[in-house]
Image (tube, rainbow, N blue to C red; front, side, top):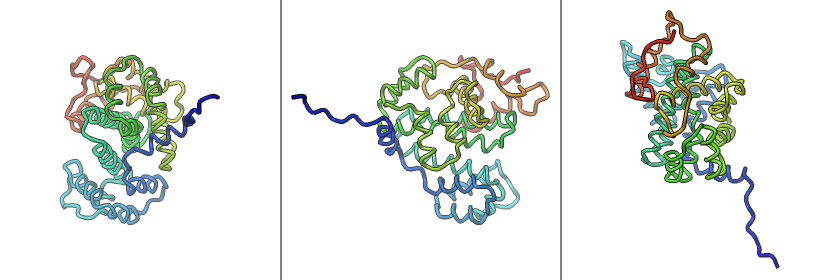
Length: 297
């Protein structure tokens, strides 16, 4: 008589079981993202939603009153902050606050911070690339922040095991995805797509999550292509989640930018370097650590 064998779960069941362990994305932030993606947004409706989460509304007010949005009078209501920031910037700030809360709830392992820095660098670079793609900069920033959210699922499942995978896996991005599949039976791109669908967010967010390590020729959605290039540039400038993963040279990646920055471009690399320094405390660096701030002709 054959021994009874345990039933092996379907891959989709493994994926769902894995991702259900991800720290909860702030419900208000999810509702806000859905609301802001619905067009015809009412400031009072957005303000009412933000006011239901005191911590999130406080962060938005703080940002609105920061030096970047300095005004003659202090902004003391959410409604005024939304008018001041605009809905796309409000969405970007709420997303950043929600993701920051998620990563802090996982733990304080150094690899979590490294993944967060990569996501923020990708967001900053996506914002800089946005004019070349004719996409709203804050929309690009939000997609850049969200692109690696699948990693949070893997970190939530087993932070130590995923940290070891990040630190020890060499090769291409495709080979790293295969390593994730071997260890976790799902890669972070697929995990991110599943989360976007589960949360009912825009398809462009799901595309950015699932296609940011896909070849340029197969990425058709503009936001996904922008995030793909921003992610690669973040890696090329030293902001890597997986330090041993290989990436193309910065020069070759810059050649992929539509209408590549010309000498008279209002978006030179010096602008990007300044933004990275403001956001992350690091200037635009080459992989060898030398500073890269000269515009590409």
